[in-house]
Image 1 (tube, rainbow, N blue to C red):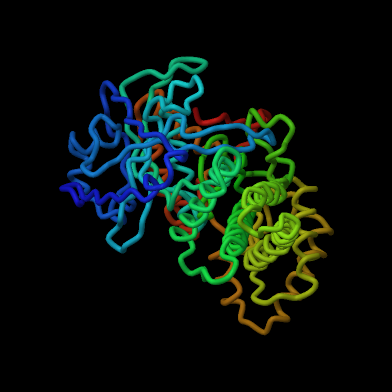
Image 2: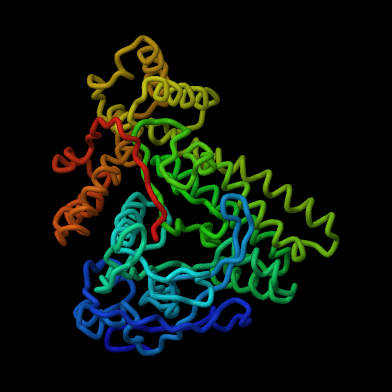
Amino acid sequence: MKTKTGWKFDHSYARLPELFFSNTNPTAVNKPDLIIINMDVASSLGLNIEELQSDDGVATLTGNQLPEGALPLAQAYAGHQFGHFTMLGDGRAVLLGEQITPDGKRVDIQLKGAGRTPYSRGGDGRAALGPMLREYIISEAMHALDIPTTRSLAVVATGEGVIRESILPGAILTRVAASHLRVGTFQYAAKWGTEDDLRILADYALERHFPEIETDGNKYLSLLQEVIRRQAELIAKWQLVGFIHGVMNTDNMTISGETIDYGPCAFMDTYDPATVFSSIDRQGRYAYGNQPMIGGWNLARFAESLLPLLDENIEKAVELAQAEITNYNDLYHAYWYEGMRAKLGLLNDEKEDEALIDDLLHLMEKYQADYTNTFRALTFNKLEDANLFANDEFTKWHERWQARRKGQGESEAVMNELMRNSNPAVIPRNHRVEEALEVAVEQGDYSVLDRLLTMLEKPFAHSSDQEEYTTVPESMTPYQTFCGT
């Protein structure tokens, strides 16, 4: 059913057993006000921009009015939060349905901050404007960096206050995702559903995300393999740009391989594997350097949930699962080293590359070098302004790197082009994000946010107007992020 705005909903998730969701309507808000709309996403969804920005269109983006064909529901799932298993679910999000795009893709349309659901666990179901704008900024930056991610269609202010430590302006974000199937969805099915429920969910995931998988073999083992592969590739891409998710609970890991749930996330400035920004990660469980390991831990929980489907013999099932989880480390390192070679302009794989890369990172940590700007300086051979470059250790490393490059038999132009396309000029620098959010939330001025988004649209352009967004201010105060509530 296609509407005047262009909504064309289907509801395959709602055809799963009722165990997996609760029919839930969004809670109306007082005074919806459209703050920002993503023209690129709207176009890809086949939506009429003018209609979407009308009063009726904005009403659908807050849940005050359901778009024709919508079937709102909240999804049930579980998850390990900082290692502790618990029952969860969409406590403040409502899935309107699955939009069928003009090119035939199926994507979830979810309202985040749409009010209480049966899974709210005492929460108010609402969201504050600042965190919703943060998700918009970071998810769009990740998309521009070619990292699989959910995207944001719009942010609408609700005209209502949200009570946290203080009263904050409320907002609703419209999130677009390949799906919201999570590792925690499978954990939920394995814990509280039947084996038939688990099988139905796995078959649904296969049909929705992995239609290429042959069904005449062990398709559930193939499902595990493909989820492992996608997560290994995703986390490698996080590491390559210095992205720190901040809360890698199993309910925040998608089956599709997209980055999801931008809460206390941030990008690393000074290279340090121990970097943590989240105020709630007091032990550093989700530090930058731990993200690959935690990815493997989460995937092991996914494998455990699939055991009844992998083989009738539980010992055989465990053996199959363990073999695939072991393979995750090799996959991750293969993706990561491939990406690091590209950042250094290395077009082929040589034995000494691992030592060359590891030695550079060691020097960057020792001399407290900025992660993004170090690779940017190497890309353009501008090595004059950093402590890292002014010492004999780096000089010796640089000689090894240049010798390695010359041995490839490729032109400087080809190697440098690879580096330009692998090393972003700009990332969402934490101080820039905070600056944009502060003036937007406190002053209602969105010009700073708009300019930041423009700079982040083409991170590999290396244009002159991006230059001011590459600087890192000196600060004695450690940067800290908070969960996006």
